[in-house]
Image (cartoon, rainbow, N blue to C red; front, side, top):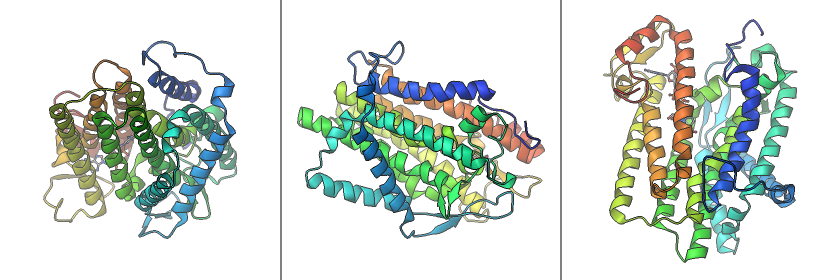
Length: 415
Ligand code: NDP
């Protein structure tokens, strides 16, 4: 292990190797299960698809066109160029804030295409080969990133991901901010092709449902609406991603490349996939109740994230100036009242409440549409532990005091 290497995560090289296999396998299992009659989350997949069902040059072409389109939208003039956090070499990178613009332009292009007769609903039948092409692309992309990182100076490496073990480093990502010119690969992958792809797949499933049954179901509308709000929010507040663990701490390797480009669009659209093959009747009062749950989740999620971002940008902003804080040796302060005085990760709590609201329209007859809620709980519990570890290293005693004053991590009085 290199001298400045962070402790190994995800169970070290063995854990990383297992995840490289397990993540794509799970994604294919979910896609297959969603369209099968029993729609079983647990147990063997309904069948094992042959290569002829997985591989399609058209799917690869479609994927590359999609990535090319999103890259072109990334390069368009931005309403703002933001600076990232300070790097090891004291420099700051610059990032275009034009993700929301990319979403709107994509929507316009898709709208034009559909009105000209583009059969968007047919995308729902291509999910398997598209997921396969994306997985292959992610493997090749991560391999290229790994090879490229071997030539990078030590100052460009991520705190984790340079253990010297090729499998672990391939998974976690060696180089922190791989770029060609001003094109930042990690920032590009984080919020664009995958997130926008997710809502596009949802829309395709909605259109396919309308084609099959005459009109999309209320449940399908809710799932599409909630998830569009989530993606629109992420892109509207795009600048906030610059202070997240993914950008500041993690290198770009298979974990983020596959997570952003494949896992998000193909597994986060699971509820809409399920609804296409397993229609659910939803009464209006129940639909309103689910909207209420989503609104509560969104209120907490947005309130907490905005409060912290405002505080980090300008602690004397009137909306946060009155909040109680703990000083730290780094000169930064920790919020100890407001949302961040309720639990140590109020934004995760809001996110989990929304995850529940996305699954409820699918009824309670199957566990499969609740996969996201289960997986996301595990992800956020693990992410919270990683973040606590990093905050303890950063803030030492001040962090311990924060933990004493705010004893619960995500759910008040529970966890
Ligand atoms: P957070 O936005 O929770 O940021 C954690 C950082 O916030 C800490 O490292 C620390 O950084 C700062 N911080 C922690 N406590 C305090 C405090 N009391 N006062 C001030 N600053 C504090 O991290 P994430 O990147 O994990 O999450 C961002 C959002 O993205 C969340 O809403 C999360 O739910 C969502 N998310 C969604 C995923 C999905 O797949 N849908 C996946 C992952 C995240 P510092 O002190 O250096 O500023």
